[in-house]
Image (cartoon, rainbow, N blue to C red; front, side):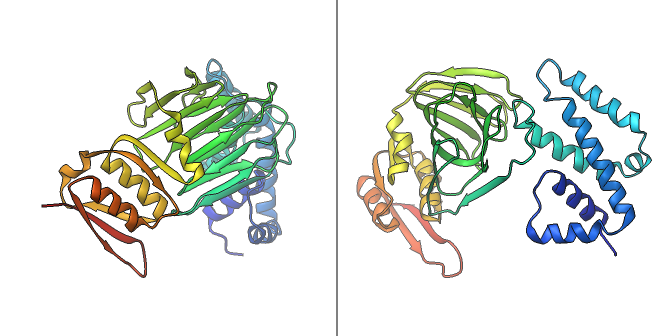
Length: 332
């Protein structure tokens, strides 16, 4: 069997963490028919078992935890690990990435994760196994376990989601993004972390949330009516009082904006209606508007409303093979 080296390590790592598709499970079984690959998989299993014994790395114990991992590897003196280090890193990365989103080690190895992606121009709503209700905005991906473990409740969001978290004081609920985390016990809040945005934000409607950095260190606590925004590059955190209705309205099919720049409104329209919006005049981006947009209205009708409120006009070009394109001009 001629197996690409990167491919066989990816399948081993995927098997260890329960992430193989049905087709990949078949390919993995064929791979294990060869003694050399079976031996590597058994050694990889042993490494994973020892890694779990080290527990999660806390802020004050990360160096010590890595030392435990390193000693475990050295103890077995695995020649195959040293000579194929770049492939074995797949296993270590997969373990550390999985452990990163757990606040404590789970003894139950049967957790299975699902992922839901909402295309641009659509919305979705679901209820998690603990009773937490989640609304997903356009262009959002949510990764969540089919059921939560004994120690924590944790999900990963790329995009924008509104949560009504089921209360459980013994199991905090954590929402994770690339460099921003929110931990709660039971509350309602809006979470936004689109990859194309330069920031991530959380807006608290009711309850209390702890805002954390990507390493789990608390950097702020919010009260109802507050919004925390963190710049992706600098990590600068800004907390201000906002009208929370504006940040929860999209769950009811509305976009509300209060003295908001036209370019920010355009970003929201692009996601909601799956279109591309450009400006013929850069100065138009700074124009500000206050109002409410209904999602069930055609995008042309919304643009016409904006056109009545300001000195702009627009051109809508239909694209049969991709996104429609809207260009905003200065009205003379």
